Structure formats: structure tokens, C-alpha cells
Image (cartoon, rainbow, N blue to C red; front, top):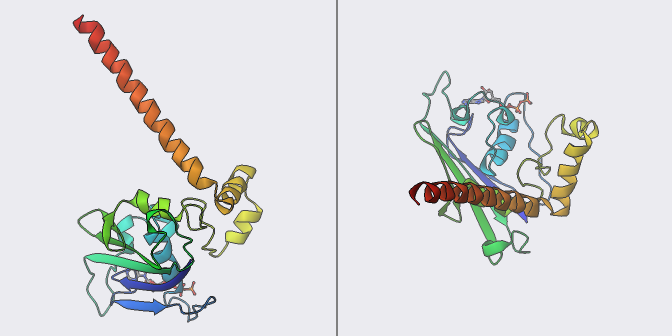
Length: 203
Ligand code: ATP
């Protein structure tokens, strides 16, 4: 799996639609201070399901939408699309057979965010599921190494370090599924208890 392009529109400083093509295994983003290098990294985190505004260096989730400059008015929506070369079939599940996978996220100022996988409307959970175990999955995403990340890893508590190792070993996907199943079991138990109470009242 290799990230082959990033398309941004209305996202942070990228107000006009911009496509960044990454056509080799090693790419570098260079430019003067404040030109938007970190915004590109934020875009990758955002599409892959980041839901914390702080992790995206903002205060609110809408802060990712272009909020105007001296020359341009703010815009109403942000969108980012990542395309992955999946010719080796690393991204599995129902998408395993696709040689290219596109993940898109859109956010409007007046509404929630929408996710698309290969053009089909999807849930955040589907996107997170797709990437779990690839290094871009969930909270222990280690494929994006931003400033300070190496230090954070060196200083990480054992539980945090374990999360990263579990993502690298591909275990986090199964832990996440177990957590969801346990939640469902808990809800079903609560519903059953409520049902038994009701049956007790009417009999
Ligand atoms: P450095 O080299 O200093 O780390 P950088 O190239 O990584 O800088 P970024 O932090 O990616 O730069 O970009 C900062 C720029 O993005 C600032 O000019 C800021 O005003 C702009 N910016 C961030 N969010 C928005 C937004 N929502 N709307 C418009 N511009 C934004």
C-alpha cells in the first residue's frame, strides 16, 4: 500500500483544489515557514479519521475549513481525498481486490463530516477499520511521524508503547473488534434486564 496522491480543496491554507502526486516511495515536502507543509500532514490524519481538533492543531473541527485570508473570503466546505496504490492488496477486506483505493472526507461548516471509500458513502468506522493494522490505524497511527513524535515514543508509558506495537503487529484490529463486541453484549444484557423488569411488571 502506497499513498499515491493527495487532493485538497478548502482545507486549511489550500483553498483552491490542489493535487499532490507522490509518484515514488520517498517524497519530501519542502518550503518556507508557514507555507502549509504541516497542513498536508494534517490532511492525511483528517481523512483517516482523526476526530480531535487538537491533534489537527485547531480548537474546533471546523478550523480545518479555509477561514479566509487578506485576499480571499472564507469557504463553506473542506474536502480531502487520498489515493492509495493497493496493487499488492495490503488494504484487505472487501477492498482487497482493488488496485487503487480512494478515501475521501468532506466537512461543511453547517454539517457533519462525510466519508467515502472508492466513491461510496461510508462511515468513519469503515475508514478506521480499513486502516487498522496498516500503521495508519486509529489512535496508535504511527505512519505519520510529526515533530516531537520520536521523543513522545521514547518517553511513552508502557501502555502507550504497547498500543503502537500492537498496531505494528496487526493486533489492534482484533482488539477493536473485541471492544465493539463486548459493548454490544453489554447493551444486549441491559436490554434483556429491562425486558425482564417489564415482563415482571405485567405478569
Ligand atoms: P513551519 O515550517 O513553520 O512548521 P508549515 O509549512 O508546516 O510551517 P503550516 O503550519 O502547515 O506551515 O501552515 C500554516 C499556515 O496555514 C498559516 O499561514 C495559517 O494561517 C494557515 N492556515 C491554517 N489553518 C487555516 C485555515 N483554516 N484557513 C486558512 N489558513 C489556514
